[in-house]
Image (cartoon, rainbow, N blue to C red; front, side):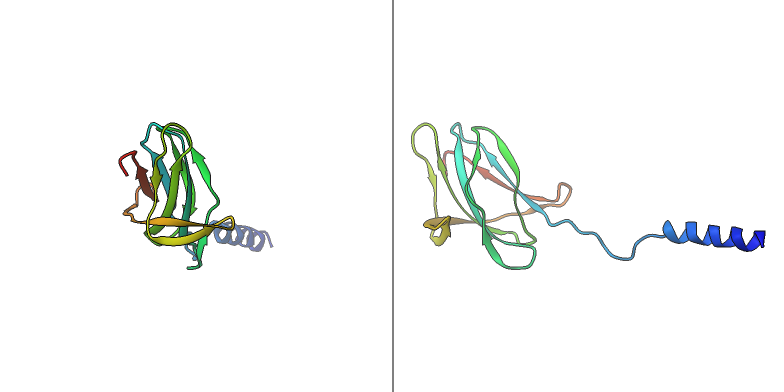
Length: 129
C-alpha cells in the first residue's frame, strides 16, 4: 500500500510540472518615441490581435519622452495623427481619414520593423516630420 501511495504522489508531482502544450505568445506593442522638443498628442489606427482595425484615443507624450504599449498588433502597418501641444504648431498627417472620438483626422501611414528582442514596433517622431 505504501508503494502505491508513493507512486501516485510521484505521478501527481510529475504531471503538475509537465510543460504546457499551449504556446503563449504576446502580441507586440507599439512604442512611440517623441524626438521633438515639444509635447505631443497622438492617436493610432491599427489592426488588433483579432485582425480588426481599431483606433486609440489621443494620448500625450512629453517632449523627448516615449510611451510604451500605445497599441498592440501583429501587423506592422500603423496609421497615426499627432500634433504638438506646446511651442509652435507641428502636425504629423497623411491621407487616410480616420475618426477619433467622433472627429475625422488625416492619418499618416507607418510601416515598421518588429524589434523581436523587445517584442515591439518603434515609431519615432521628430519635429522635421
